[in-house]
Figure 1 (cartoon, rainbow, N blue to C red):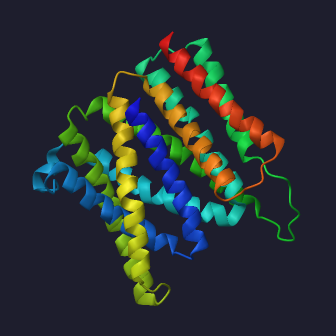
Figure 2: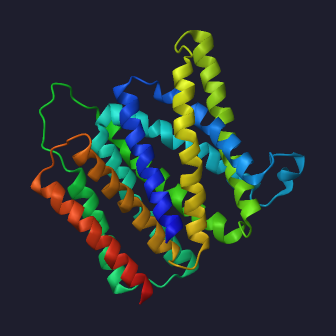
Length: 294
């Protein structure tokens, strides 16, 4: 449970950090790219050496690490685009609702037993996400094109695929801590190289300008980002809970923690429905936990 708790705290920190990036006008694209470079350095320090060498091409997990790296940077940028086009609320709701995909994946592929209590808990989790994310309707003079509403749907699927892929790779390939680190570092390096090519294009065309504070932001983001996934993998490798319980608890745990921070630090005003949603997150966590033990 400790690994899951640490993953929730670190993921919540990442969400809170993005709020500060917006406040201090940090270029999020540059911070995200530098963050992946920092993830590679952090993982190498944890492992004690840089694990990427020619022989890694022969590892069974290598193609999956490349796919994960592409998904990492694609989903991060998709979150940014969707937030601008259709709003933060719809974007974050789509991201969190994706918790249902790895649950279905675990049930059909690995035949994990899902009790009635756990099903009710997952239903409560989905309901909690909708209630916590609910905002009062605001009139807008700008009409949003219909195609832009496909962005949250793509995000929903992509985020769920990342979680499901993490479960698959963990069960199939990651049988030691060293291999787990190699896999993560390879994925992060892939994301960093793709992002670096993108930044070089932006720099060469004058669309973006480098600033040292963007690099510092990447450091603040990268170290906890690495460990948030590292601890999630460790949680999945433990026998405390099944994967169909860990992913939902992780997602709604992050939502609950970020919401509390928003209330007490950012002084956000929540509706009665939002508070009911927060209570529902606690109920969902309890039901999923108990349902996993039945």
